[in-house]
Length: 207
Image 1 (cartoon, one colour):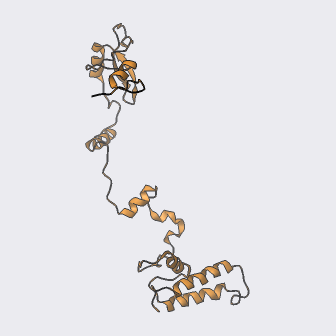
Image 2 (cartoon, helix red, strand yellow; image 1 turned 60 degrees about the vertical axis):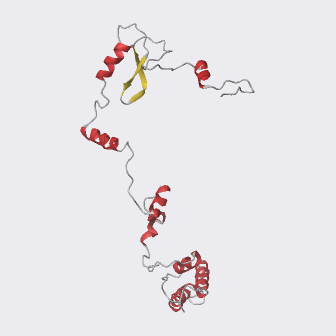
Image 3 (cartoon, rainbow, N blue to C red; image 1 turned 180 degrees about the horizontal axis):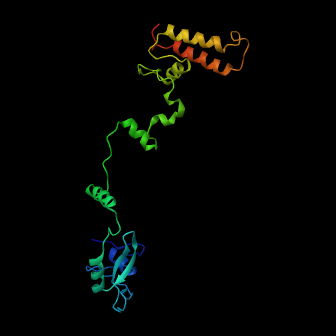
């Protein structure tokens, strides 16, 4: 049961068709509102049936009468000019409705793929293959401690004593009192000191 619109608008489908009859087609495919003449040479019958002009131009049409559209359709070949390789490729796509099966990959790879990155190492560029021995054990560490391990050029399965030895080596190179007064690497020195503080207070590394 339909209710009348309080604003006086008729929103029914039949009303919309009455207001905009353009392009309406009957059961036979004829355009009821077409005023065109058949595009077949010498034919003056109404052109109420449309047909695409070419396989690669499917949105531009000829308009024919019923007789000539049947003749045109009988001669129509969508694959005219297509090579055998292109035809085989199209047949393969058609078997899966042009929706190829995606390879099963791990969730992490799919997450990178959504960002347009096929290989996560691309994010790191040339550094992707450097220091491959780090984090060899693959332990889970808090981000701060993981960063500290990298700064100290250590491994996450080392003891605190082993990490401390790596820390001391870096201090000898970076500290002005031990490298002949060179202060050009003070920023890196601060990072090294910060990194050792993270490991020293951590419960994830044995003494």
